[in-house]
Image (tube, rainbow, N blue to C red; front, side, top):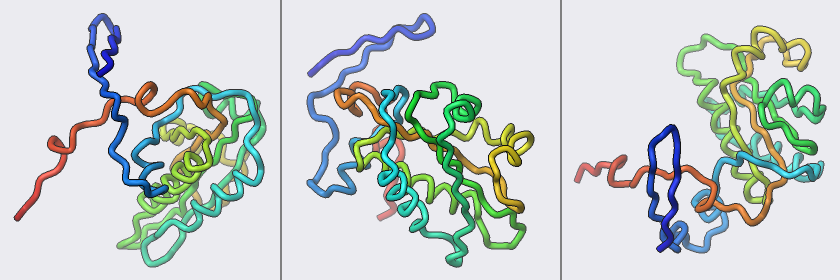
Length: 191
């Protein structure tokens, strides 16, 4: 068992980290999900265009209400624009903007559907050995001030952004990720 001491905002937290990362079962999909984490630092190696294409295909395969597929994806490679969108822009990163169709149809949940597409792309990026970070904080500013500059299609609003980049391979979910709640705290069973 490793002990990690963190000092934040004047409060010392002691985290007990076991040498067992996450209980995985050898399934590549669940292993990626269980060992994944939100990347906070990237290295300046460009993301390969083939990887971007695979990530976009995975986003497009997300399920959606009534198979409406209400999303549009905008890939931003321009580093100056990326710097306006996310705080820790690193050369070689891309940002994929997920926009959803503006709809008032009952039973449609465009934001949820776009969230599923976002998650598909994050899992795809991590399965390719890339880091990913989801942002929703900049959404209001983009929808108010930057839709034209980013060529967001008419009739769509931005729902999320995903920063994707290469990462230091020595960083993992144990050393970098925020601790997760224990399942006992978030799951109840009705027998």
